[in-house]
Amino acid sequence: MTLPRPDAAATPALTMLSDLARPERRDALEDLVRREFRAVLLMTDEEDLPADQSYFDLGLTSLSITRLKQRLEELLSVELDANLLFNSPTLEKLLEHLTEGLLADLFHAPAPAPDPAEPTPADAGAASFLDAALKDLYER
Image (cartoon, rainbow, N blue to C red; front, side, top):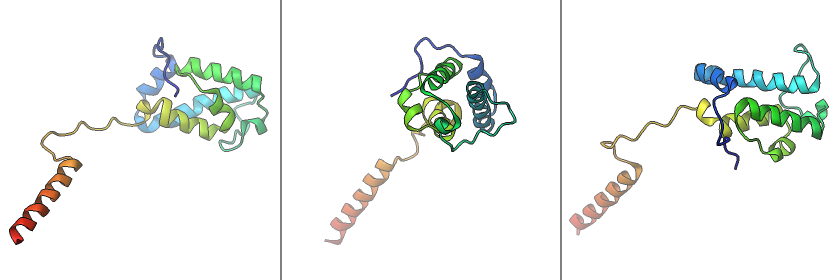
């Protein structure tokens, strides 16, 4: 499991992401990650960087992936698992891992706190069980 660095302070990139509205954060993160990929690949902004193509096919090497990993860790204050970068080597998979895993709290609204007055699913199951038991007793 990959966790945020214990000494992590909010980096400018994280601050920028958290200052955006939630729907805009995914695109901003993608822009940031694409910029870092392009820098490592020595690409211009005009060159196509397919999100679903293996970065090995795009020309990244083990050394350049290591540099990219370190740079993204610095920018996002997270520790990226090297296996993720080597076993799921697409920009799309990396972004999914970041938005659904490491940085999920930035991309998903927190679940609302349960209302103590509202019955829980367990309460509903217990109530239906009790109803069935009482009906069975009544019908006897």
